[in-house]
Image (cartoon, rainbow, N blue to C red):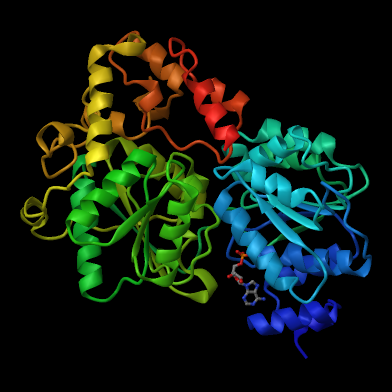
Length: 517
Ligand code: AMP
């Protein structure tokens, strides 16, 4: 008899768990399931990888199955909100497998794919709906869905939802939910702002915490290398090449701060003969799914991702995480390195720190209370780096870059100059980003809107702020920034906030196309 049956879960659920090979509940499951089966609200502090999907799914399925109700059109009994498409799809897949012996339907909706098909699937209603916030509200606005019959509400990855600017969407959802419901609220970190958000959803919750807040995964070996921005690509290529040759690398996740940065890294790795793919919000859903599948199956050992795209991705066997750029939010570092060392495995995190990123490193070490070991540049680095081939660019990427350069040069949107975004890579096809100068203006601009604050500390600037700065000096075209990625399925109102003055209509047009699917 497994411990799951001691928890009192229904027999069809136990059978499903058996076929998945789960024997014992994980700590969060042991703590959460009994309270949730009693119908209590829950505040869970846990990262993905702890088994939290099953922790909220199993008792919810048990309760829904124990009180069967006919499906009502355009409605659901359980709503799970997730910040990203990938995580939503992953949760829905898990729930389907846990519910396979029950008569409960699971649907999943997210942005980036046509809305019509999703709306049609909701016509007869479903028992469980997993959704990203933007697409959920689109469906509600189209009257394809009402939330009036939700009995169980789960908000997953609340801190990431906040980071992504979903706060207004969440407040709207909160107002549409029936008062009488069970609510579960999960977050990897619980700063005051998230706790306040939680208060809008949960009442008198049981609190479940599986790891001390913001503690870095203990099994991850962490290293930091100090170098110039322009040297990072060569170091990444050489390290991955050496690890692959020694058969020490199974799967590596590389984090870049921006979407264009991710593409650039893939081009460089590919030209050095390393099979790599990128996953970020500019890729179509089909491309993202294909890249993730290739990575999962091991046919592509390197996945280059932005934080948003990678959030919550559950791929076992990630042996290495590379932080090509350090995240400016220290909690993000914890999430990133948590992609490795899952399910008891060992993991290695290697971070690259340019001079302007040192304040970020300080914040990370303060939060994690870990002094990260320094790994020097390998011997003969400069000579080896010089031998690396130049990346080839796809014709459409070259054309896109040329158009962007041309626009920058013409100084549209009231800018002057701003044509150095790749630090020379584009003009000469040189083999390293930004040459050896490292951390030069071009590099800084290419890496996500970092500017120097008055205190000399790098700060993030909004596109609008960038433009204001630009009136004092050269900035880049905000419509073509390498800025950090936008949230999944972000809606009109939020997109417009980013539209710079002087670029009328461009954002709206894009939104129309997006919303029409
Ligand atoms: P999650 O934190 O929900 O993303 O889960 C992380 C991984 O652990 C997923 O691959 C689950 O399938 C797996 N998992 C969840 N619960 C258990 C369990 N009790 N025993 C073994 N594996 C589990």
